[in-house]
Image (cartoon, rainbow, N blue to C red):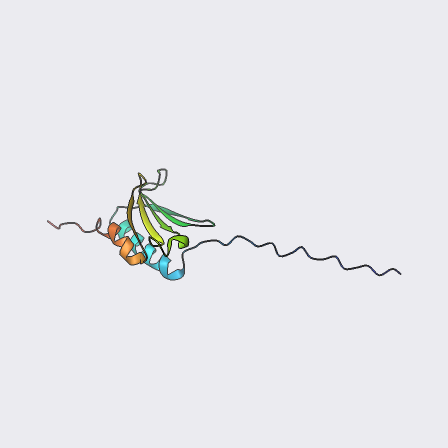
Length: 115
């Protein structure tokens, strides 16, 4: 009987890290989303977690392009802040390091004068 050398396992192939929103961030985002849905402003959302960015897209109707996109880019943490709210036309409405502060730009649209 001949002894065989063991077949080596493939070397650890690094799975690219994925940027995602953590539980606290999602709680803040979904809290705002729920208030806007109950006000009749928003109807649907989509999330995407990529290698360098996490995206929460907000839709007025399902078949449209998103009216707002909330992005998390950890690489921008030291420069401009890792959170950004981007409008439908690509304009950055607010950027910063604190998610609640950045989302205030969307909460202003919820406040209306009561007649």
